[in-house]
Amino acid sequence: MTTVGLDITRTGWVTTFQDLGRRDTERRGVPTGGAADQHSAAVANVLVGNPRGATLIENLGGELAFVPDADVLVAVTGVPARVTVGGAPVDCWSPLVVSAGQEIRVRGDMGLGARNYLALSGVLAAQTLLGSAAPDARMGFTQAIGARVLLESGFRGFGHRRFAPPLFRLPVPVLRCPDGPWVVDVVESHGARSIPGIRELVAQSPYIVTARSNHVGLRLDGPVLHPDSDAEIVSHGVPVGALQIPHADELIVLGRYRSLTAGYPIVGVASRASLPLLGQAGPGRELRFCWVDRETSVRRWAERESEVRALERATAAAFGALGFAGDAVRL
Image 1: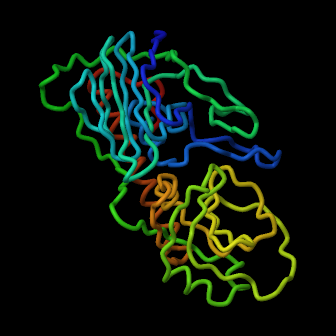
Image 2: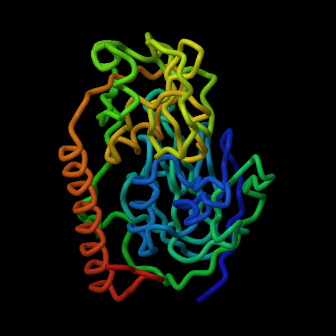
Image 3: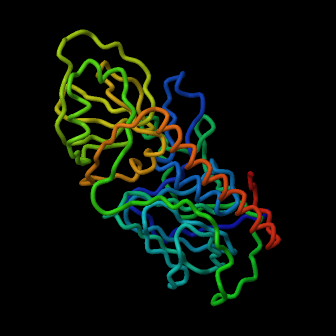
């Protein structure tokens, strides 16, 4: 393993260390946190031979750029982006070799989504809180990227000529961020039964992500209904993606930093396969909700998981054929 220095020449609006979040901390009152778009973060790590949950860099808006002082293996995922290495355009969602002294630049298309993820083969030097590098601003753990970042890496290069055919043709499950409204699958929760007509209203109405959205959840402008009675709703824990109706006339889709219901009704939960898209939804994005049954939700998540596992196998085989086992490839 070699220590590689990354000189950060540009950062986006918010550029932080990130991973897939904390485990077994919510019982202590600490949200799981982690990458808003878990799929893109996991795939970025797989593409460079890391475990899915390894620390990587999340960039929200603007341009991220750095120069390594040794060759590094990099992958950029998330929202469609313009990526250049040494001024030449390269592909997202693919392993990339950035040679020592070259600058890589990443600028995401904010009109299509909010976040990019950049993984490097190896272990980034980052602080952790309760076992995770995921930021938690409420606890003063911001994880902002500094002027220089260190990486422990075993990568030694592939000896590939610049204009030779691509080394990799991998079955990458790219997250699609289409133009126009995004459709989110939702499974009904018991709270929908206390609000007659809410299913029909949610299915038929457009909802717009507002600038009031934050790490706790997406706040949506759109029509809502409230319970007929004033009976108390007991506050309880809720899953990521829960659709909550507060007293105000808005719909909230709770994110990875949510806590309890605060006594508001939960009318549904976004399917797990839809969560990565919600993690890319920025202000102005129109969302539409489609009710599905639990079986459909589980099946679509299983299909997504199967695609990522297939990528893990293909990446391990490709790296092995090139004489590079990765720093921590997991099958």
